Length: 228
Image (cartoon, rainbow, N blue to C red; front, side, top):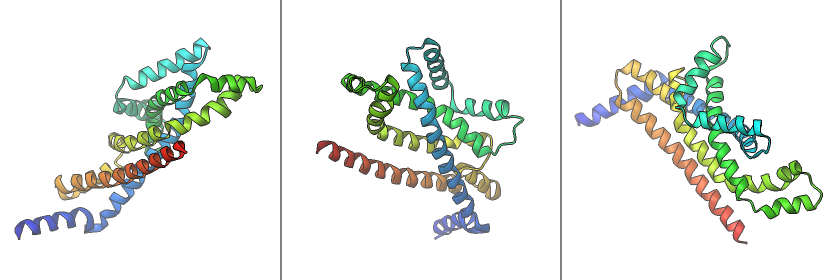
């Protein structure tokens, strides 16, 4: 009975007292917002970087390769701290915007390799067919190669979004606005680490499980469509 009472008190202090469940809800909202903004902006950066790496123009290829190499070779936390405390140190931007930019730059390097692999997986005959129809190299890439590439890499992009949701926890180094930040604020009130962290972990798991299930269903439908 004492154990049940202790659990009940812990859950009450973590989620119910002073409406602290709203902190978790707000934190989850920021986590999803940052992740979505980062993956969308990262997709743009990744496509540009992938095209740069595949370009025959050496300066573009060198810059894109350097970007991917540096970003993938350094910790996300270090990149975020540099962006927040150095690059945007004197700019009045909301922490979630800075966080989204930081994660987008980081995600863009990984998406670049995903996109590059997707482009290279398309049969060269597709490019030759486009050129034979009178399309330029850029038009062939835009209207023939990229649509097929995006379809092929969609599961990988969705997985990158799921990974980002977990990675955004490091934004706590600059601001406690995310889900883990909500858990930290509760800890500061209750002096208890168990229930706030356990609650955040459960919420992360449920959200990621739902997204993973949706992703698996989308992949299954895409496979069925390809088999027709």
